[in-house]
Length: 133
Image 1 (spheres, rainbow, N blue to C red):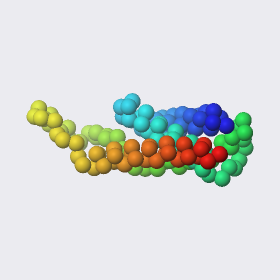
Image 2 (tube, one colour; image 1 turned 90 degrees about the horizontal axis):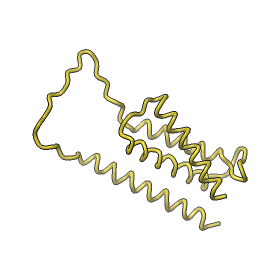
Image 3 (cartoon, rainbow, N blue to C red; image 1 turned 30 degrees about the vertical axis):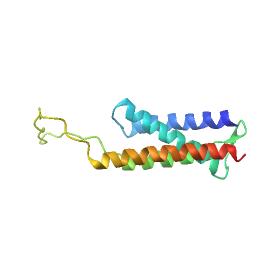
Image 4 (cartoon, rainbow, N blue to C red; image 1 turned 45 degrees about the horizontal axis):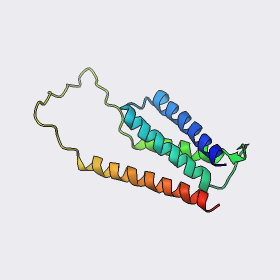
């Protein structure tokens, strides 16, 4: 059951990432996309383990909870993610600053800490889900 759960969560993650990248044009560095994929993967896996099973099965595992949580988490991520900046005809470009690099805003640090907290909570929920039987 572990392998089937793992594969279903992986397939849901791939589907959601393709959807986010091509339909909504989610851009950014590859490392950021990998972190989004990790979050969707773990969220789908947790949903598949902890939600009441429903829908058809694949190798004894119900795939509908994985898909439902993966889609909801992906759409939430899309809603809170910053949209790519689009430069119009009248949008002036900011001047290049050759001074020291600006410090990272506190909001970015807080979101980063919250992100890793969510990842740890998802990992613990997955472990507890398999340990409880």
